[in-house]
Length: 281
Image 1 (cartoon, helix red, strand yellow):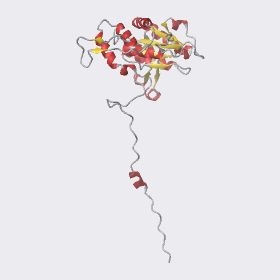
Image 2 (cartoon, rainbow, N blue to C red):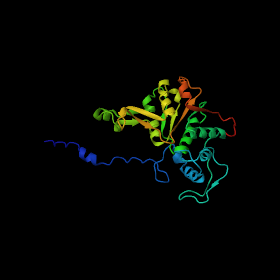
Image 3 (cartoon, rainbow, N blue to C red):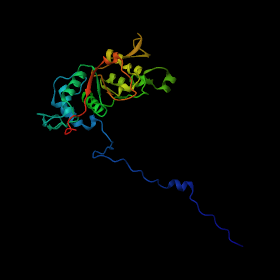
């Protein structure tokens, strides 16, 4: 009789599961041990300079500001020579040169700082590629220590992006209450006394842009869905000292929406010109 052929041995699922999966490579780490990112925000990249400037100029600061107006200007345009501290705080260098970060007219930066110190909205306009967004980032980082409270203007931007939205799961389960409220970057800036950035504001629809009118003029935002704590009406959020808005707009974008006259009056316009000096560029 012919011998029965034994079936080929197969690896059971249990045995296969014991096999180790190939190890995934970890993201590259920096010298400090933290995972590297493509681009650090200016408040992290220039944290050493910001800490130095806070100790370098101890003069009067506008309410809610992290630096004095003079120190904000120096942070953006840089210092020609290293600056010195007589008695630096712990962890701060005694001598440091501030790196220039924006190539342009110093008086433009000074006007921007004066606008923000006067609690006026700042609108940076200019040709594409003139570093308007970079300048708004640097100013926000120097004034309030964060450039992250940003709204990117597009044709799909809605009022919720400028005011507030809702967590609909909580809204359905419990009804309108503070836990269900999702604050926008602008509302977060109002609550914390920070600077909100609105990129390419003219790409938003006019009715969306005008959500900023009452915020910039009255410095408060009503939330009619929530009752006031004293039962007198709708809940309101009042802007803390230091709150402001920096917006940007391109002059050559197609498909943009014209700003209303009411909103224009809430901003000081500053034109960021292209670099005219080839050597500087």
